[in-house]
Length: 318
Image (cartoon, rainbow, N blue to C red; front, side, top):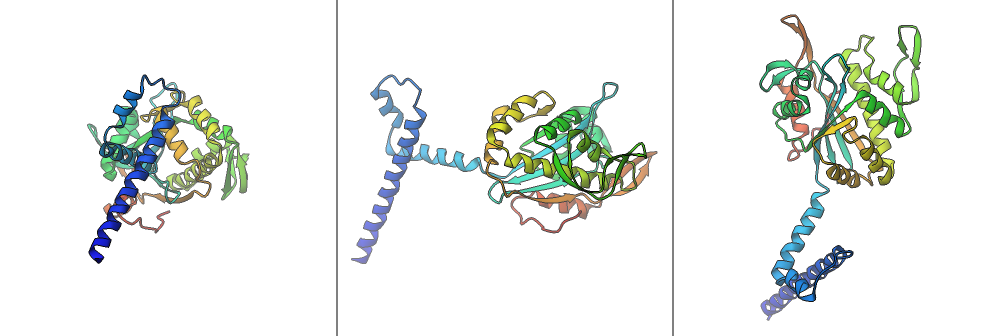
């Protein structure tokens, strides 16, 4: 008797699931058909097919919906492209966005990092962009970290400054005074709201003893502030930025539709948190050139950050 009841309950649940799934699918189908001229009721009946087809299609639609909230790994390159020389990437960041946890993992690579550049051998990582553009530096990073980038974004510094300006500037906390030409104060110590021009000066400043480490820390600070601004902007304004700068200062392998999907996915991340990392390196001159070198264990620590199947190590290597 108990067994019979169990079977009845099981079938009831299965029927309920099928009915609910069918209702959801029909509802989705009705919405998608608005504005579309369908020829006849017989065509609608053919489209629906069997209950099994409906359930399978509904599952695919649901999986696609879930997939829009997946973890995304991408790279950002800030380049100095002057008219008299080939641009090189001055800012190199690999980021992982987890929309479920509303978290952004950010790892910076020194521009003078000595790595294998496919087709060119051991060289500075920022030379990869000069040799083969965004595609080659993408490939270099993927091989170095053992990852697959979902997309990458390259923007020149003028565009970087313009986007900061368009979002209302960025809030930073300067650890010291920053001077231009040794006597012209540009940014004072303490909390500051920087416009686009001053933010660009801040991330590129190199007239001190902090070297790449200080520059990377400032780059991460500004990028975080910019992303916080973007996370609180309306979707409409973010889409306007994409349409303004897409293929006009911003180069990416993600089409404009995909970029809009990512922006829509992050639309509610008002509480976005950041984890900052940089690859530990040490300096060495090889064949007359200055390089940043790494130990394998330090590289492995960065690699583990982007292995989404592993628990992210919470230690900060800043």
